[in-house]
Amino acid sequence: MTIYEEALQALKDFKSPKAHITSLGKILNKTEDKELKKFLNNVIQQLTIFVTKAKSSTPISLVQKNEVEPIVNLVKYLMPFIPKKQPEWQVIALREGWTPPKS
Image (cartoon, rainbow, N blue to C red; front, side, top):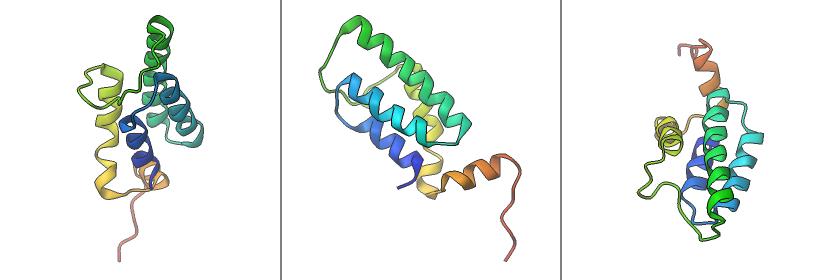
């Protein structure tokens, strides 16, 4: 499972907001993709505000009927990489200008 698939699965899972913060934080600490880190930080900040205000422990999925901008932006960022099964190193390398060798 790529880091992008792992992040999307973490968003889809039904768990408490605090558990979402924990699982997304683990992915944040594991990834080297600066763009992914930016999106994850935004979602974690949004969830932290929600947890502080609502004190909710009801399990939720972050992708079902969700229109919260940071979550929508993270999902949009992840989606192109999932069908390609691109490893994180390749996504970062392509972004930095690397091109795969010609066969």
